[in-house]
Length: 268
Image 1 (tube, rainbow, N blue to C red):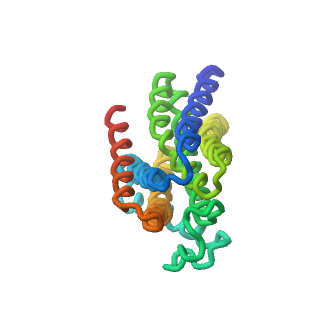
Image 2 (cartoon, rainbow, N blue to C red):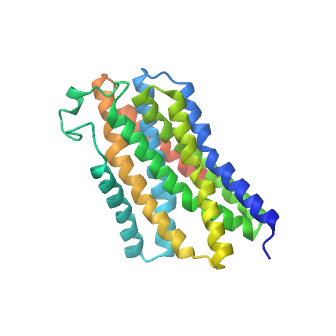
Image 3 (spheres, one colour):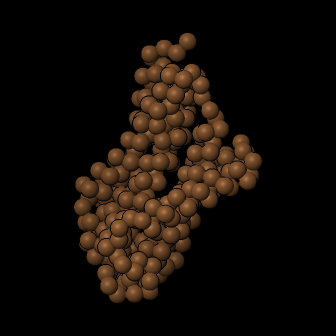
């Protein structure tokens, strides 16, 4: 028998896990916008975090629970979905991926539309990622408070660097710290939304589908991989090149981001 107390604790834990993204977003109040080395390093770190979450956690979980072809299908579907979104979003940048991009609009321009769009895509990816996590948190809490707490702590640990991955490109594009922090905050709210959806499914239909959760993990892994490879890393490298910085800064950020996620998963 599910009690009101279990439901309230589940919602609270999902809110706690989701809003931990704001801890990463606080970084925008510390760094300087014209510090291109820090911005490039942070973007590489953000890409490493997203790739690490996808490679070490989301995709393996999907492959272990589904047939590899099924997991691979939904992984690729996630990439294709964001690619289509990327294609159909109206661009102020006409030749987005051409070699002349940097000649038209400098990447450190305070109103750079490409960086802003990148940040928004990252925010969407994180928000979608948080939906199934909220679902997982609420279901674990309904099983036992201890399980819900462990899941919430684990999710919060890697939501912190994810908050950074949302805030940095938006801040770099808009020079607006409050905007960057606010969008990161909103992306974290998707977690309790996912918990509420899970609660409706559980209490309204009386069923829970583990397969749906696992499929969502593969789909989100594809989304995060595409954003990292097509958006974050190219811009990070271009920012280095345009400002005379060593592109190995980006590589170091990637390694650091993946290492943080790997250590977090080992510890927990």
